[in-house]
Each structure stands twice: as structure tokens, then as C-alpha cells.
Image 1 (cartoon, rainbow, N blue to C red):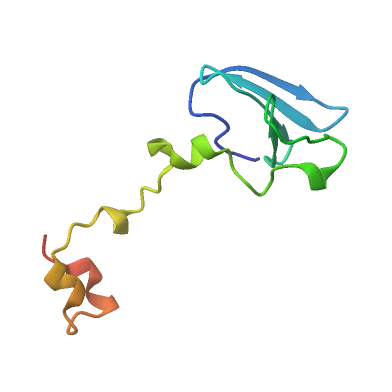
Image 2 (image 1 turned 135 degrees about the vertical axis):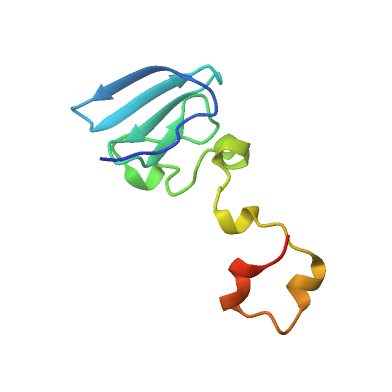
Length: 105
């Protein structure tokens, strides 16, 4: 199974094209995109750069659509990023990696 974030809006259409092993998606974010069956970003219809389903070197992969990269829902939600610390905690030489879970908030 493969999972990836294709759009910043709700997906309104999804078409699997077995012959070419691609997935076509449309969204309320006003974009229509083409993906390989493995989630590799091929391109957005209407983009300025040319691409071909049959020439993988023309695909945008490993790039991700810019809107997805900057969308808040795409940001990492790792617990370490949510820890609030004080500047003194960050620069205190007595703190080691073993103490990260013990930082006072």
C-alpha cells in the first residue's frame, strides 16, 4: 500500500489508469495532478514545464508540489517539535540527549 498527500484541498476525483500505471487526481484546490502508481509526482496539468507519462526523467519526482510543502497540515507533528523549552535549556551544557524528555516547560 502507498500513501501520499496529493492536494491541499479535498480530492474531488480520482482515476486509476491501469495501462500507464498512473493515478489522476483533481481537487477543490483547483489543481489536477498526475502521479505514478507508487506515489511519484509526475506533474500538474497546466504547469509551465513539459512532462510525459512515458519519460520518467521528465517527471517532477522527487519534488513535491510547492503548495503541499508549505501547507500547515503537511508539517511534521513530531512530539519533539512540540516541546516548549527556554533558551537556557537549549544552551545549558549540563543537559544531554538523555535529559531531553526531562526538560521543564
